[in-house]
Image (cartoon, rainbow, N blue to C red):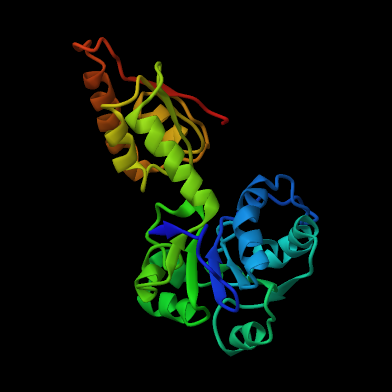
Length: 275
């Protein structure tokens, strides 16, 4: 996939998958907008080209359909302020109402769709759901670096419905370029930091890094699964009980890879909590 740098977007409906999974306080105020700011260059590119910017994202982990605290309507005003333009909001992400909202857009307009995860089909990678999303636009842009590894409807499956009009956003393109440089020409010592709530989905990444890095720092919620695998006391902390044995295997692999080699490199496992 190419990025959108030199792609003319005037008059086109551009569906951008961003990662606006930002923290909100009890009054729905954004406490860290770094993820929103990171996506601004891509959004501004579409606006400046005279395209119609349709933004889709997830927020939190809703489990029973619509939940007020996870509505993306809470980010609209802040996004409007950052872009210095009025941003619209659609109370759904598929269906007739959303299609109408998009048909009413003018060139240069920005519209935020409601939380994708209010539909379980999003995380299930449902093709029918992805197809409904795809019908909303002429062009698909993936700029959600934080979720690009997931085979969800809006990240992986939807791309199949845009055989000739799918692109990386400017953020995702930049991050991929940086990762390529880091992996192919690393400066040593080379330390990788992996976070997140679950080991699931990160297994391949972790194991592939063992032959490249000098040390690995595990942070976030999945730390406790590794800590338990190492015999630690984690109290009531989040843990994937069914992944403890897997964590033990990853730790054993890390230790095995840590044997001094001709390159005199070691791979270390360093669990840290609270990152």
